[in-house]
Length: 551
Ligand code: ATP
Ligand code: MG
View 1 (cartoon, helix red, strand yellow):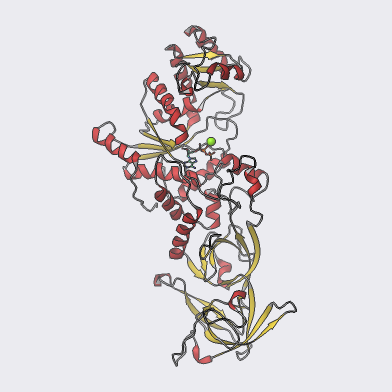
View 2 (cartoon, rainbow, N blue to C red):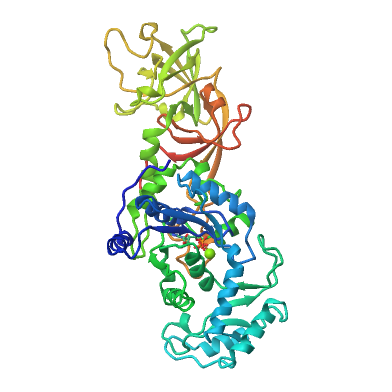
């Protein structure tokens, strides 16, 4: 279930006023994805607003597939979109709709406009179309055909529908005002001819409604009261209102808010599709992708995403949110809610010389330091351990948390262990540490109360599992990959955005359910990948434990 995030914003102020004045008695919103790609984090903002608003006002939010464009739409996307919305914790109940189911009604409505003298068939070429439309500073010219009779227009439009014209030979235009300062009102096209197979209506239609004509009608048919979309549609709103008013049907109302933008992230389905098609990433759910399925696979949480959307809020100002802010929300959530485990990503060996060769002990360790209810698990301990390379240092200063020769360190939950000697390879890299343990310190505490500075994580070498661990970094090297007009955003792809290593993990992690999130203590946040199996363990690094220092 979605955790309730209380919001108030200018749209909610409008809704409050609409309810108070009696203009509306029930609130209906909609989320209208075009099924031509997977949802990204920008869509999450629209989803939290559309579904969150309906929740707040005990209204309804419709999931409507805006499938009026026959090309590029695919059932694969339809399934994925539903999965992602459900993952965010929202539920559309029975209210799932398809714009393409309204094609008959839309056609009738177009005929209604023709009959009112408010639409006409125009056969200008697209070049001429632009020429006649004019520029914002100069009025347009009346296209030939604008004064055609209703009868002739009805005949021509029917002929369009019946396949009597080539693709693109003519369009149906709304007859509004060729001199309007708003170009969208200069007799916009509302129907075009396009012979293309549609995933829902098949080959029934060779004419398809344009977005501006279709969207307001979809909203109206469904009784949507508050139709929220991003700012670039503000200039389309007069057309939205004009169409509904001329058709004299339910008057839905459109409101615009600013898009979510993040540094180091490119959000646009078209560009994301490019990354997928060119093999720059492994697919739509590559953990470096800003798609909801990619983020889920990476280990990001729905709650952190929703929190980000709530913090960013709903305004009319274009802004850009720093990725660090988002990452910090994810870390906070994972710190609180992920289970602890031990894993060593860059292993060196510890040999405990005075520990019996054939002995294995089991130690209990907490699954979460602050949440007793998460219980404990046992981890095996034996004479040889893996520890992190960074947990040993020659001639370490006092503040260093780890081994140096002569220092006693707590092996978490097990024993106090002292390092006596170090073995290195010819290049000076540490291979192993020769150590001794104090058998009186079982559980990790000395009966005489002596203190050690450091507690380190470890895994028993004999019992550890080898896991493929994918270390992800940002996909781009610059904050705004779209900022340089001379270059393509893909020129800024970070060549080191993925590093694959083999890590040593505590054996219990072999049985992790794919999708389970962990904090590998002292190392970072990790998530069992969808490809993970007990035989071939695979983990994705969600984030490092702490934010890297800003360069
Ligand atoms: P893209 O530009 O990535 O292709 P889109 O707007 O074409 O996205 P749609 O499927 O048409 O994708 O969008 C569904 C809804 O999501 C729309 O209401 C749209 O305004 C909203 N939306 C898309 N991107 C963002 C964003 N970055 N921030 C907030 N809302 C967004
Ligand atoms: Mg789009």
